[in-house]
Image (tube, rainbow, N blue to C red; front, side, top):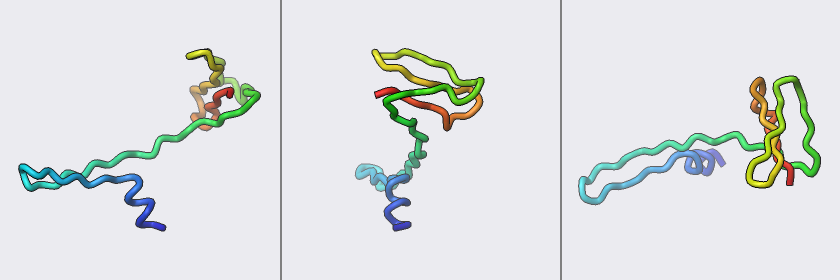
Length: 69
């Protein structure tokens, strides 16, 4: 299981012309909650409408991010 997680977050590329390998690390981005009813959780949360969807973004706690849909 650890090998799977390690390979999911880092990628090794081989450059055929130079013979060198380059290691590229991709950090896991924290997602957002997808709900049918979004609510403000604290004073830092705000409603934002983007691309026809309703989002909640929070300046104080990134865990409060939500998307309606």
